[in-house]
Image (cartoon, rainbow, N blue to C red):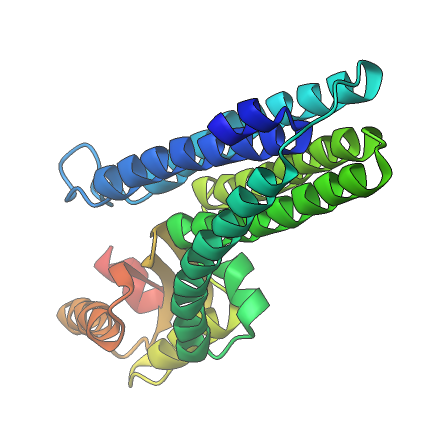
Length: 285
């Protein structure tokens, strides 16, 4: 922000607001991590995992929109009442340093996403969109947007310096504001999906289905829901046809065995509920 004031650059001011938005976002994401890690209790038997999506949603909407509003205001003001900038070297130095730091952070979040993509056998970009961890997705998106914003600001400052025309800085500030709006809306949409109970991707559901159907005594699966209840936390609910020859205690034992087996099979499955149906299941119920 000091560099923006000293240089008088609208593009620098827009990037300064972007940086402040990132700081606010990091604070809210830290709150999301801490609150979502609380253990389950009587009021919340599935735990507090979805609290991460609530706070990440707040961060994506409030912080990014606030940063975008300031950037758009700076850009429109520069376009309608141009002031111009000076000390271009200072702007280049600050923006260059910002790119370096943002790149380091981006590589760290990208490394984590690449590891998860390999684990789940997905493409990297698919993992960015599908990951259930709102923190790592937000950090990656923020850093990518920050680097893009820095580049846009540098281009705007450079054109201003070379041509003497101040409008490129106003245009750069507007573009940074639009970039923030786009990133904020995309992050908000994904957090909303998880708050509403997003289902696990089809390959994950198919592995769960195959695990259940392989148990002796299971005839078919009438309904299978594999729902995210938090970052890397799944709830499995299955309505299962059981062989009619099984007695009530055998049906109950089979259901408990499947439930414990699934939780042992995957560290991401937080809870399993097997609901037997059919003649045996009805008799037991």
